[in-house]
Image (cartoon, rainbow, N blue to C red; front, top):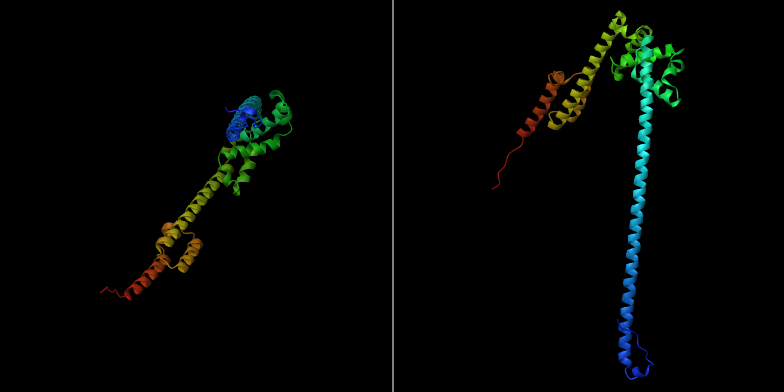
Length: 268
């Protein structure tokens, strides 16, 4: 690397141009060296920062992993306690003739564990003196095994709940004559609701097909849909109806008439 030379040195007085050139080269080399040093410092600082961030990320990963393990362990302990309480509750329910419904039992078991109530004391805290309310919720749990929740709005459902609620043991409610009558009525209502939903879906498909195929005029298609709704038709009733056939024929006749007035021509 070139070193700077003095303009005032005796040996350089007669070589001003050479001194100038030498000093320019020396300055360039010094600047380049400074740039390289700065780049090295920046590279080292970047590497240190990368290592720092990597260590920080690793510490955070370990912390989260420990936290997850801790939560999983706490959840496992909680579930084990709740399972023990639930097992005891099921036995107690069966003793007094109540259906040990999963929803009712799970709700009480969770409350018991949260309140640090042992399985042995669960009966005195959550069953004794509360039999009537429990009979109601257990009856609902029992019927949920028989009737899907989406149909529990039907009029006969609360009547069935009352029958199960007052029966001991509750599972014997299925032998009750009135219970069997109500169950049969609800089953028939469910079948009709399912069939109705199927007919609605079929009507939608018929209208979609007519819209795509253009077999009817749009205004007549809207009217036809209203007629299908009013009569609660399914697919077969719809496409076999006189209304369907008349409107399809009307469109076909119009198209044929228009086509008959079209004169084909040839390019000469």
